[in-house]
Image (tube, rainbow, N blue to C red; front, side):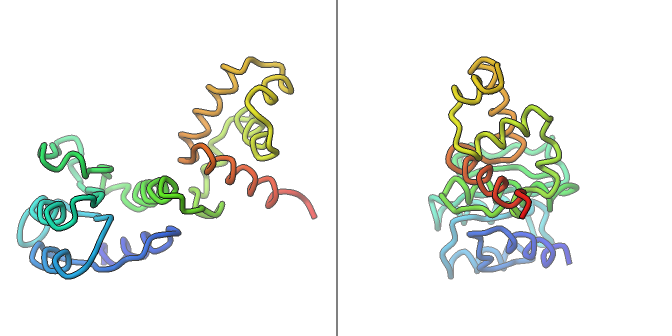
Length: 191
């Protein structure tokens, strides 16, 4: 049931196509040898062995694969040195759905996939402080950092500090942040 729910959550992220699911090490290894993958979401505890065995096969078969590891013991997990370059995130199973969706959204944004506003966590905008929301709206109106500073009467360094906080909270940066802010401005404007 967890696997089915996980696949559904992954399928909601634009740019993600769930190509295969596996419940065991053996199924995972078979799937990796028969198809092309560029992202692997992996549980460490599988009924027939260690998920790291699947990770090793994945890296051998697909050297550029990016892996997101799920674990209920994230603090105890140590990634083997040979797999570090392919590890993109370690997600706590107790928060798997929200964290996984955020990580996958970030990966897709980094690959240039445009994210609709709905792909941002539903409460992400609510986490912005009033000044951050003000700066977010100005970004969406096309203002530069210097323009925002002048308009709000604050230094460009202060604007950059707020922008970094906005970037972290929304998991969007650069052009992705500008697109998100622009979309937000258009969708929140009264008719």
